Image (tube, rainbow, N blue to C red; front, side, top):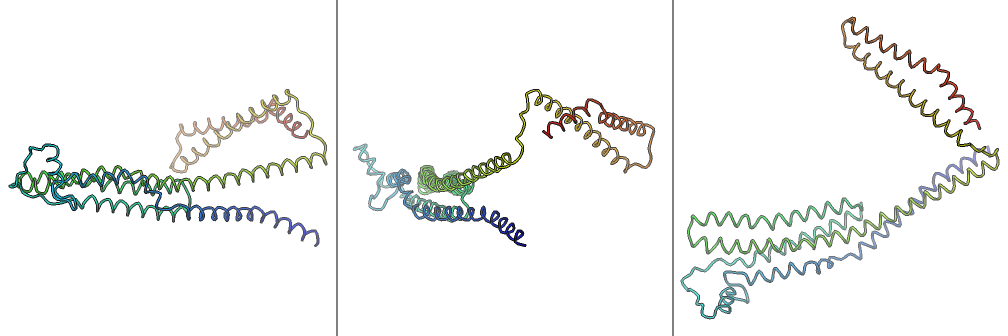
Length: 326
């Protein structure tokens, strides 16, 4: 009873040790992820968003109507470039769309904030490169879709306004299309913001992956050392393994090749038998041709059986047995 209890305790210890080490690894990974997530702030997008913000500022100067604080900036710029130019007071006043780029830019930032929150949640739960790429790709697609859809809508309005007259064309369609093209530029320049978010979280995923790889590499090294140590102890307590000459190894290789070829022949024959039996099950009667086919298969089986009784094959198998017994 004492011996049985001791063995049971050893088995339990050996089984629980890898699980304990795995739990320690997961605790380290979770601690690292939480620490890394706390260091990543949404403020990392400020630098890559600088270029798109400049495009937003330029949108106030590319306007056909009055802009808050700047007034009719297009007329002022034309006056500055061409001092003799005089504005036509009879021209209709177009609609003011200065607010559309601002609204879309705020929407882009809201999307990037949503991507940041989702990335933080998913990386904490399941850190993987596929997850980061999928989230960034989905939000990038949404941003591109919004940026590209407005110019297309503006082009449709332009085509309609040609029929409706000059007032609708110059007062509504043209200023809207101008802002839509600016939004397209802002959307393209906003992509580095999402790329930066993906890069920050991808670094966390890569570090977690490196931690796991180092752990399993060390575990494999320890297991290899343990196996070598056990083999060394067994060899020291048993008879030493005799040296095998190159001639023995060559003969051993030839025997393995012959055995492999014989096994392939037997396997092909059994497959043929199985196919024929499947066909026979679906037949009502057997013709002379089918019986002849069965006879050929039987001859193949006889050939394979005779190969098993071949003297060279038996000699090779005996030689293989003698090498193994050494």
